[in-house]
Image (cartoon, rainbow, N blue to C red; front, side, top):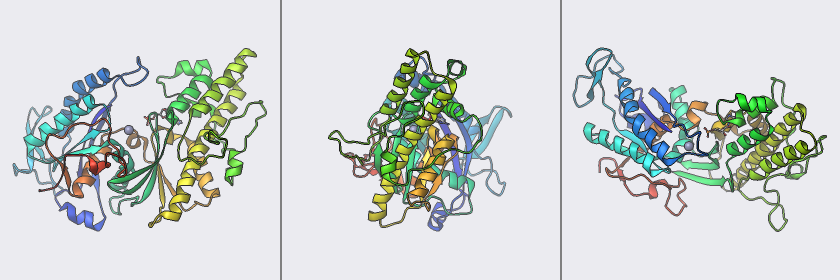
Length: 435
Ligand code: AMP
Ligand code: ZN
């Protein structure tokens, strides 16, 4: 993925500190475009393909982004002061125009493939030096956690940024399944991650087995999880779903009229006791789907109604698994936390799923957490994107942080201050603004 965004406070002429102290904000997204490398020939992201894509596209994207910088301030005055403006060649006018000079430049520093990240870091550092402005190298996972706050700043400029800390985030995508407790801007405790594959990966695998071949063939991409939802719920009819009122009902095996049934992921430890481990696991559900389809194939194949039932059950099982860990986390936090939590942010491609949204709401309600608000950022902002990086830089910059020139890309970088590397601020290269 290779992207770039240009973003400013709407009122960037006003001192940032004042807005921050009031807890009020307004943000504008001036340009947002995404280029995704074609890795379809490989079963994942190929480092060389990703690097080529970054090198080929990043300069062009920056060039395009600069055209979209504001040409005048909030009062319509052009930026005449050379310290506050930069000269950009406008191709449509065939002449140079003055644009607002950014206050600072933000780039992703990690975690991820160092080769691709370095392309961005080198470009950002060059711009920071040329424009004589600070550089802010941020954490990609921190940016995911802050996305809902970006949405709030973009959509509700008149109100305080929401959610306020602390809040919970559930990141459910093709590459991640993570439950995070965000205590403050730089403190994000990872409460649960997957022990095996990501939930999106699991649903894609389920889709590959369950979807009838004509549907698989018609798909333009490998996001079979999305297709699986459309196949399982072809109409807008209300979901037939009763949330388990207690953990005992949640763990009970639920036989179907077709003769197969799913086990609950991580229901038991290796020694047989009931497990309450704060972890996710999805391979078991995928294997049950595969086995069930293969068994039927030996008996002459599976009809459409049964496939639909299998799709619904597989989704119910993995979504209830997510919900169960959310409830466990809320129960723990309820007893230990000084500040009450009021929001769960759900992001990533799988968060589009209507059945997941329904299950989470029903599950939280029946377990005594109806006061917890569910927030679903729009898809373009909750899958990988540059606007969330720009926003994270903005929050870090306003909190007084910038990066030293020469900071390097990092493959691993935790967001959790209790991790071995010390989390976001544990990495070298941070300095206080103006120091
Ligand atoms: P991301 O990694 O955030 O880009 O999300 C991509 C993943 O989300 C893929 O595994 C998709 O199959 C999955 N996905 C997208 N839409 C849906 C949906 N409506 N239901 C289930 N999974 C989905
Ligand atoms: Zn990501």
